[in-house]
Image (tube, rainbow, N blue to C red):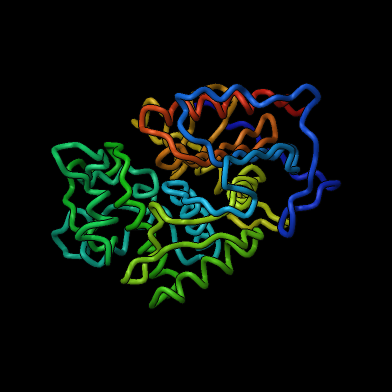
Length: 337
């Protein structure tokens, strides 16, 4: 396994963006790459370079105050929430899960660890594919029989592989993680869960626009639903670019960001590799990204001290090209040092 690229620290000359983003200019000669038609609709682009907002663009009828859906970018925010609970000693990634439906003495799912859930290597059966066998488990969870209690729906799936031996992307897994976080928090309803999430994560970063959606059972649907502005998505990316530090405080446990960007064995795909609720795109620059359905991306580029956000509407065929376009945009910024 290759050594992780070091994460850059915040310059003491640059204010943290908790209140407002410090403004700056892009490198001389910078120009956004051509945006071909086969990328779908781009509603927002925001680029942070060396801690400053240096490039921003919005599509028709959108602007800095427009909120956009995260889709699976929320999974990476869920990773941050788990990190806060690990920091406070309320969760341990190597510990067995506490999913109530799995605690029978003969239930082989009982031994699945939080780490395996975060890495999508639990071995649980799940169909994330929207057309596979005429049924999509994720659609059924979000909009069908599972919508009122997404975690209970996901908990009813059997093991297909021995835990830790097989990687398979699963939104159901993320909502199980969210339910584990809910119990660790001691949240008993929607209000108490959201209050904790806002106080401990969103408010600390100044993500004033961010709104998370819970199901009827009071579980944040951490697989899919946060609504926020492009600038607030950039704040979240900036937390990870800075190694979990915010305003000089270690908000996430030391090493938690490295944990997110360490490759999960067997996770190679066209999108790159998977870490722990973060993606690791192809390439040798150590970039890592929070990816969402329809081409939502928060791309973190340590060697260039850049966070790049793209929000829009793209098809499954277009979305990988969006990521490549975003990578091209990032490489138009010089390497640090």
